[in-house]
Amino acid sequence: MSAAAGLWDLVVRRAESTPDALFAVDERDRTLSFVRYRNAALRCAAALAARGVGEGTAVSWILPTRLEALVLAAALARLGARQNPILPIYREREVGFVVAQSKARLLVVPGPWRGFDYPAMARAVADRVEGCEVLVIEDGPPEADPAALPEPPGAPAGEPPIRWLFYTSGTTADPKGALHTDAGLIAASDGMCDALGLAADDRIAMVFPVTHVGGVAWLVAALRSGGALIAVESFDPKASIDVLARHGVTQGTAGTVFHQAYLAAQRERGSEPIFPRVRAFPGGGAPKPPELHHAVKRELGGAGIVSGWGMTECPIVTMNRVGDDDVPLAHSEGRPTPGMQVRSVGPDGSVRPPGAEGELRVRGPQVCRGYLDSSLDADAFDAEGWLRTGDLGRIDAAGYVTISGRLKDVIIRKGENISAKEVEDLLHRHPGVAEAAVIGLPDAETGERCCAVVACREAGAPLALDELTGFLREQGLAPQKLPERLELVAALPRNPTGKVLKRELRERYAVS
Image 1 (cartoon, rainbow, N blue to C red):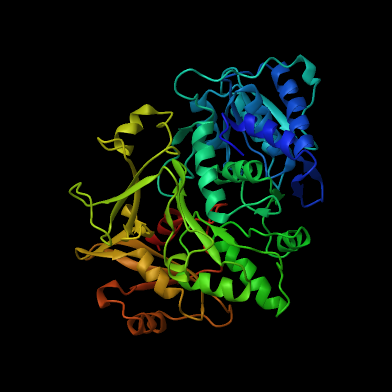
Image 2: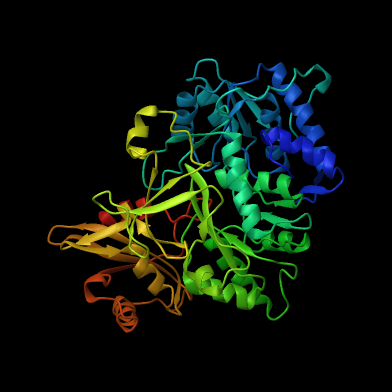
């Protein structure tokens, strides 16, 4: 499909190109074809227009990954609204901040879901934001006769308009609202489509929130490729895997925690493939242990893990390709997607040579247009317009990017820098470790001490600190990098995209 002006343009073109092909299916086996998707979005747009939503109207919405959410996103695109998808894990404090800062005219929420009363929260938030109304969507989006719809917004003469506002997940800092255009999100998704070779017969596991920037990228990917989305409201290792298998998943998204669940299910099943049609396991959002790629490819099939790297401010900066060798697939996050530039910068601002670690900075079409709070822009962009990602990494001579950690995820012990990711990758090699996170905790003598937080593979076989440090020594880890403290947990706290919430771990163990 040729270049498109915006998301609604994609919806229309795909409905005309393959009208009866499957666009999405959910856990209840409800389906939408591409033409039915367009028509549902038009009816929803008409109902929203009757509420005063039009071009530029700020609309915040929180919905699980349902067909209704996909329809709402297209309806808002048809009207040219500025939409602000919010992760369902946010509660009144965060939602209130986001809705107030964005000056939302409409806050869209589901009915009570997973034990939480979203309508009650929404009403409490709207009462504090002037001019904000609440719309509850449960069984189907609102509808009206589309004959009364105004003409779609015309193509702007200058810069493309801001159509999206995504807030950072807040794992390392307070949420910040990143401004995006349709064109930027389409560019990001196109890079992913190309790297994965997506086609009309693909069935994509949409297992994480559609309200995440990655969720919108996958929506665009389905419209670009003609493939279909398998919408999963809340990932459950057994029920959700059964849904994906039933609908013939070919792209087993979406990150380490999901890939580990697929692998565990396959091992429980035995030799019979759980996903016989799978082509690849796209990943992102959280670092992967290198050995996980090899296990997934060997036991689940396809190309293994085909991961990428990006962030709310700039989704899908790099991505591996399905035809890449196992070494980059296991150890890197791929090469820059078309139009993207990535460089590694040292503490003095100099560009680092190939293979040298530095802060990764990026420039290209999918970089956000800044923050809603423009006072944050000066710290986010350098003098040449490169986005400071805060991620540490290396770029090899072939252009492959390997993430080594976060600038703020470096533990400084007695003046020595310890990369948390280096220690984590080695811990994941231990047969008794299911998952691990390494954090720095305050220490009066050393500045910080290195603490390993580990979930054991067997609950009845807890690991001990001396066992793990002995293993790490055998792996060649320098003595000054060995963890000095071990905390055992049933599971690591993660956000819906699979990122470990290290700030929560630091707060939990800093006072114990």
